[in-house]
Length: 135
Length: 255
Image (cartoon, rainbow over all chains, first blue to last red; front, side):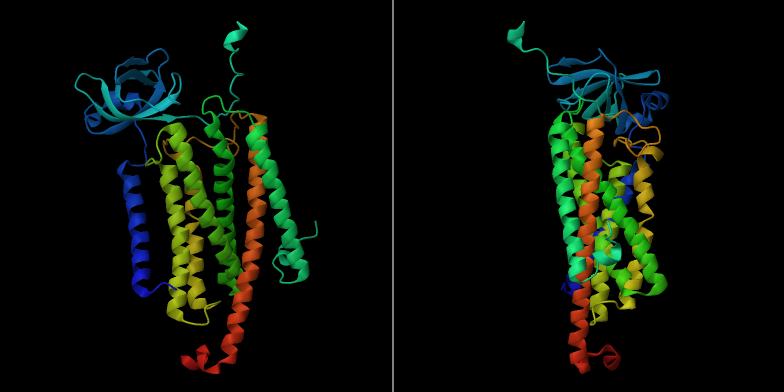
């Protein structure tokens, strides 16, 4: 049996946890990320820390030392992204990604964090490539 | 099968046999799902082996929804009929739902770490699931707190069970919000595949492993529910005999 002070503490922790989650969710007004079109339409809002999501444009990924450069696209709009640090292993051209950071004065989005956003389609991996000695 | 809910929760040799059969069926399905998910289903092209977490994450989430639906129905029936039996079903289903929601969050965090590159995101689906966990954990805490205040007999006191039933019914409002969050709001979490109206492509072997896993978790949850309901009734009966033997502690005399 939990005694009364412990019980009150438990209820307080549960209430605080709930309040934290609700405020955390509403802070971003239920939109996890902005699209390139929204960021380009209102660049001033993106000077604050925001999330930007879109398709990693095929052929746009370049590695420059510690920095990875790529472009995110959505319905015809594109934003260039400068990401410091390695993206996750699942990061690929042609797949979606969400970056967190702010739009720089040069129009390039400075990202501190990148997550991969994958779809709801599941396909088997292609059979492994021919072993090297089979050539 | 002749087994019905009544037989599954009957505290008789017949009921015990029905529960044993259910447990074995769950074990068989779990073994089949393990083989299908581990060996038969191919590795996902984009996500790699991490996608196999789906065979735990999705059944846990779905059966948690089902458990909360049982809480909704049983709590409603308890409010209408005042029957302690429905309250025991609601309590056991709440416990199962809370455990499965915790499993959903844990497997989801690991999957997110491996594929998204983050353990947690302030995403509507993730926040909604965490709220679902908190609301039903709060229902269990409320039951305990009220039972302590009411004092013995700890079972079937309507001053305890009615507020808990109201919370159990109200909490179900979150279930559709969580399920449709990925459609209503822009989120990091992917949308549904199998429960989507226009089903996006999924390899049939992956779909088979997923359905076997859902069946295994559903049957296992049914068994746990029946077993827990029987145990709760034994506890209640034992408490009633103890109280009856000590007349001084009978609530009508204390009050």
